[in-house]
Image 1 (cartoon, rainbow, N blue to C red):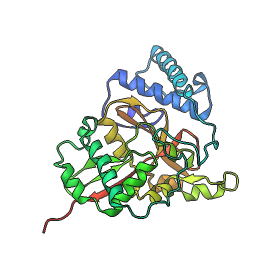
Image 2 (cartoon, one colour):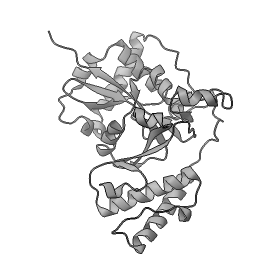
Image 3 (cartoon, one colour):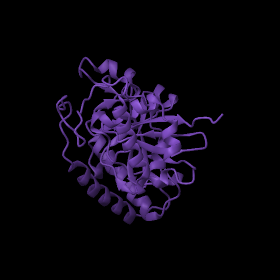
Image 4 (cartoon, rainbow, N blue to C red):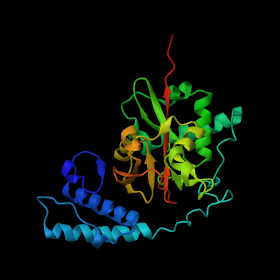
Amino acid sequence: MEQNRRYTDVISTELPDEDNLAMDQHNLAMKSKQTNTPVDELALGEREDETDKHRELLRAGAKKRLLELVGIEHIEEGSATAGDKDSEGESADSPQKAERTLSPEQKEEIRGKLKERFEAKENQKLYEGTGITWEKADVAMGDEDLLCAYRAERDGHKPAILMADNEGFWFGTRTGETPLSTRNCVLDEKAAQPLRKQFPGLKSAVKSAEDIGFDRLMTTEEGAHIARNTNPYYEQDWSYYNTPEDIRKAGDALYGSRAGNFLCVFRFAANSHYYYGGWRGTRRVLYKKVA
């Protein structure tokens, strides 16, 4: 679907025309919001089969979508403090260092959360046909895995099993919107260090994910898998995703936003930091080998 990649790279299969239009409207609105440029002033890419009517629909839909995006109430950049609370009652700037080991009660608590989300109907398609069971996953998770999940839960990631194969599974961020604790960050320490004199305490997505215990930022393939196999919705925020080395060397990063059952992936400066931008993470767990 190369012809559909006008404003972004879309990780998806071939789409019906109406879905192509809706996705282009969403992406054009996002571009307008991020560049602070009116929709009517943005140049449209050329397509051989495009009509003036299609362009009118594209701009009209983008304007409507932009109103929805900017109508969301955001806290001003930098205004969050350690006392701010997100919807889960956790600090919006939680320190990552608190738990180093878990008590038996804490382990049971996080196991209960993971089991509940594993058995939730809305998540079943994520690992359908892989042969995974909760018992198999539970036995595979060691202390470090549970500690990572506990920290992720504390910081509002609502960790859940996201994918599985014959050797193991991945668990990670399973929120609708980007967790509040991850907001207003840059991609990594290389991007953060030059900015910290002007923005003290500026966080990096990669370092924050490592501090929790995630293996890495979520990949675009993982994000697209979640989007395809869960109920559709339009995400109001965006997240940094695992970025290939060649893109990072150019000073950029990958970030994405959910649009229906698809993940729209953009390339943007790695030192960008906004209140509505954060990150998602994943961790790999291997099944226990039977002697």
